[in-house]
Length: 89
Image: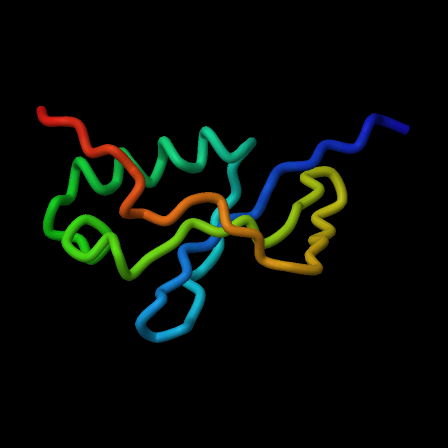
């Protein structure tokens, strides 16, 4: 039996609507933050870039990529999007 491999499930929480966006998988918080930073930089008209005070990156669980089992018991704040630094191109 091989070693179980886990990745993390993330979701953007909309503070205005009080709803979570569909989840995505990433290897750790830093990589998930970089993904959102890249999205905000490449699409300045996105709601995330235009209204960063309204959104937060949340870790919502783990996913076992060998068994497809999902584990979650809480949503933990990774970082508010208004704390992500948008670099000038």
